[in-house]
Length: 469
Image 1: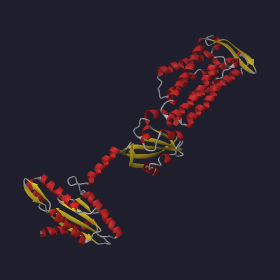
Image 2 (image 1 turned 60 degrees about the vertical axis):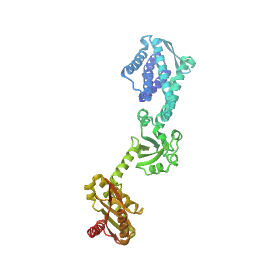
Image 3 (image 1 turned 120 degrees about the vertical axis):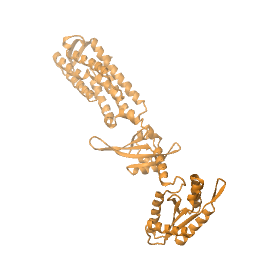
Image 4 (image 1 turned 180 degrees about the vertical axis):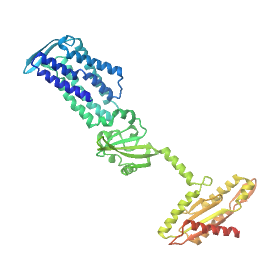
């Protein structure tokens, strides 16, 4: 693009030099300078169009393009010594301008065809992008297309003889093209947004990406983002604010306003509940100025499901489905903290099965597992919704009773013992009745001992009751 701009500038200033020539020698100098730009316009035009469309240009094609341009430059610079480019070159004055009269030689037609083919190629490339799906590229391509039409029309008008006195309108047309190119490049940040990477990566990403400008308006979004509720292609084209677009989805909007990383946000996509991680990153240009931000939604459904499963495994006893020892103690500390904060009573209970080893020895470990499961089921049915139950050892279970004094704890544990004693299993035709011993401890408040102390007191009562039985 820089080279093309330089070529345009050289061509335009060279033509002005040509128009002000007083004699044939000055005309020769003007043509030599003018063709430093004009000779390379078609090559640079083709390269720019190919770069814009994401196509690489192999070195043989580059060599061919610049080879033709170099021959044109040499022939134009030595036009006084041959008849290969111009024939019978003459200059005369009209209205204060130098008007060139000449016949067209073979290489002149080579350059003419080359230039028109380059304009045609660029026109086709930019038109294809205008008609394409990528709306950001489309807006840039419209500017490029508008800028490429003017010089092509002007050059065709010149070749057809529609321009009086043989004047070349190409330099004027290129000065019209420049504002379109500049607007396309800088208004839509062609260099910064890297459309080639956008087409190759942005649209193919599984992650949903929304680009927001410095004023909070949606500037772009990829195909994956259009599946998110509230986000459509047209929002980027009309400059709708991201907050307005997400107004109907409070979950995403709240996560976005948090300005950071939000994990496992629940979002319903086409009737299916999925979870997404949201990362909001600032977009900064090369000068360190904030240009906007990118919202990246990564589908974390599988990871969240795995995390939930791992959490469940860590917090749950695999055999009985009750709280694991670690998780029970964590939740017990939470309940004790709540009792301390509100100065309310709390109680703890411990229960283990009697003669559990005999079941294992007589009927096998599978029988012991069935006994533990039945015990856990019976104990679970006797509890309030606020009570906690966990397996803290082989055949040992622990309970937390919020808002319960010692009498209440004793009554609850004795009720549990009675219910457990009603449970029976049949192994190899033999009926086996369950039994259990229990202990309990409570703290009426407002002050409470540490959890370990409550645990020790309940364990002591359990030991005493076992000895009594």
